[in-house]
View (cartoon, rainbow, N blue to C red):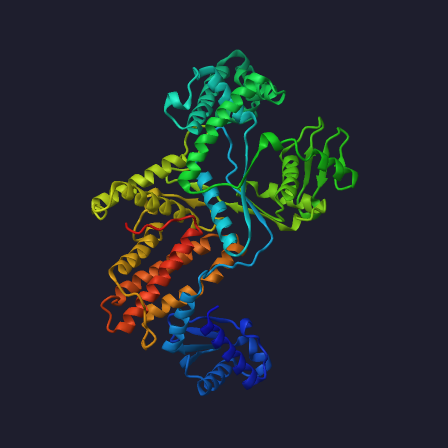
Length: 615
């Protein structure tokens, strides 16, 4: 909070105490930015004081305003009352002091107090396909959530659990075995994750052909006649029956299940193929992470953790947290918290995902020393995480009250939903390349970067493209389903990353043109509306960052950056800067522009976005 705002709140607190004998701490006052349709810059809401003052809100506001004007003219130039709202009109001294305070704070918007360590789990992909647009939203939310929490003082460990085992991975392995002809990423001149993903798609194509032929066979026709429901369409039946066919009749299904059993039995040949293909995928993933500008502090692998949790389950059974069915399976009853009964161990003693997640949570608590754990996972897993957290509470785990599922909606394309098995996805790498190409074509058409080197141009294109992708995704509240349109994301006039970058670039251009080493603006006496709007917006930044952390919502930071950029563009058009009416006005506007640039750069960095010097 700026010194000027603190002083203003102390004055208002004194007014309430003096006029009405109402004791209110300055920080407890509800002081808000005045609505644009009214005169004034800040508003005190007086409705909370009507009972103690025993007067109408409008009378209270008038009496407070009158008293204030007898006490202070350093900050207050006037006031007006709209019902129960006291609108304060402020002097140039207030704005100059506020700008001084903003500029004096080296880490404006950042809290350095150390909080308990936090873990943020995000991405956590499967190793049977490359990362796609849905993963990008997950990655960007996880990274930005980490950055925002670091800004408010949390030491953050960024981690993921890689789903590197299971039937889906075996499908890719089997297709490569049957049709791969020893192809490698090098021989195919393709990223490893894309190559493995091609074989996952190929497996599904092979399975579809097998299923199509089986439906026409004597066995398939007999199955249809025997199991078809009354009034059920033929296509409906075959769609419903496909999974059962895979598990009971499919030769490819049997081969892939056999491969999974051999993997669990640690068959050397299967394990060697698994390690080889996973290595290809990891190398491909790492390229994508580097392109997106993210990294992880700690990696976990499902192949290491999938058997975790069995001991925890048995201990919980002994303590009475869980119960055993007649078939030997172990369950937990969550009906008392509005959920249902969940299986924790199958009757044959094998684990389910919940078993693994219970074990992994406990392992991370002891391994990383993180009491607070954030899971960035799509909203289709809402129920799973509700149950996981309630089970951990039932077990009395010390960290159970500090878990959070950052649930997010899916990403749709203008063409519809994505389906991995059909190959109808937007690969992360292809999306980045497409947006870079779009940015490059637009920049070359304008010819604004003809005077910079080729390597510098490519770096600028990359920064603009990544800003377009990241901002377009992060400006949407995580809980909302969203539509991603690459063309809209690069619009220089819309609510986009490049629009915000352009405000920053404008400021840098102005700073390069001026040679003034010392900015003297204390005598500036008539700040314009566009200037005070910018200072008011800047003042809110620490609260915006804090809210983004407490709500696990990077969109609040994204929308702040857009609002600040929009106000700067208006300021840029409304007032003269280098050719201002006086040296004091020029210096004030240069100082204000520099502060806007710093906050734009910092707020965008919390979204994982870099700012170019040119564009």
